[in-house]
Image (cartoon, rainbow, N blue to C red):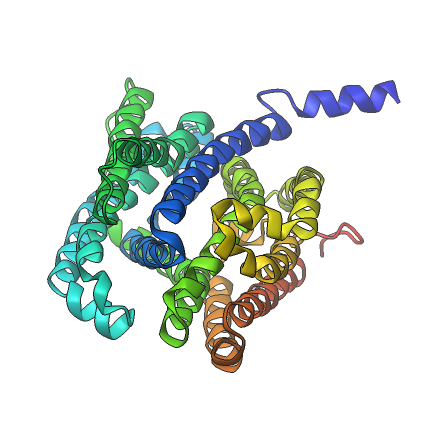
Amino acid sequence: MRKRFKQATAMLAPGRLGGQTVMAFALKIWGAGASFALGLLIARQFGASGTGTYAIGVNTVVMLSYLVLLGLDYIVVRDASGDLREGKQDRARGAVRSAARVVLVAAPLVAGTLWLLRDWLAAEILRQPNIGPILGIMLWAVIPLALQRIASAALRSADRIIISQIIDGPLGTTAAMIGVGLGVWFGNVHGLMLPATLYVAGLSLGAVVGWLAWRNVSRGWPSAVPVLALPMIAAGVPIVVSNLGNMFTEWYTTVALGSNWPVAVVGYYRAAWQFVALAGLLQVAVETVIGPRIAAAARIGALDEIASVARKSVVLVLVLGGPLFLVLLVIPETLLGLFGPEFRGGATVLQILVVGQFLRLACGPIGSILVMAGDQRWILASAGLAVAVCIIAVALLVPTYGAEGAAWATVITISLRNLALVWVVQSRLGVNLLGFRRPA
């Protein structure tokens, strides 16, 4: 018993998987807490309709950021981590520089073009003509969000997990939350323009701090060697398609709800998502830590090491997340009531989404394994599957069942995609996730 206790304690040391995961998760909780507080302020100030409008804007920005990133944040982690393991600091630096240059061109181009088309985008694509002015502000967030993600990826590759996670959400969200809170306190929040502006400002703060941190980390390294951007983009395209496929589910169900039901229903759905996202942070925290490890192991073909890390991560996520899942299932109405009485109607939605989140986490870090191993074809195929399933499920369920239908469409989409990828990782790549047999 004492030996097992010592082993468990050793796993939680700062340099071990458990310790780094706990630290990363703590930072994600910080960011989630700030996001929750910001959502609570908006819900209390503007009700379910305001929450739904803000959610549509944020989801659109996040989806666009995946588009302009072109998957380069994942490629930076994969390539730079492998380069650093081989002692090639100049090449790692070059990879980060090439990715940043691509984003500096793509992000302003996309944001500026869509800003000119903001009213058309709001009316014809999002089916919410009234959000044009808010969208016009939030679209500019694409630039700092994309740059922030590249900076965070670069820091992760250099094993600077803590600072990478501080800039990737918590810092900017906290700044925006404090700003909105002060505005509410002094009675200066009369519309969503202030929260939208502070959202952009918070992300800009995170991007600036992230790149200053990267400059400090890479100081003293050899000068960057030229790394061609086109091969990185080619490797990243399947990843960006996969990311868009993942984000498409949340975005499309949200937009479909707004098109078929009052925007207040989108508010219920968004509130439920915020709670479920807390559980998802466990997986994000784990993948933040193990991503560079998997990339380095994949560089030398260490499949057993990848499988071992993946299995440990599943156990860690489910053990840490068990109490949270139980609370979300047992008292959903009480939790949603924190946003206001009208949000209690989303209790069943929350319970459905919790089941889907549990299934997703139980499948393990399959996406990271495929990305870091460089097998993009399966990522691309799974993204196509997810989009097709989501469109069909939404068409069948959302018009009739509203937010509950959207929740079931989400669960069905995520579950089928992840089960398919488990089969790919286990059977096609030879990474023994289940541990029942040795890899072929």
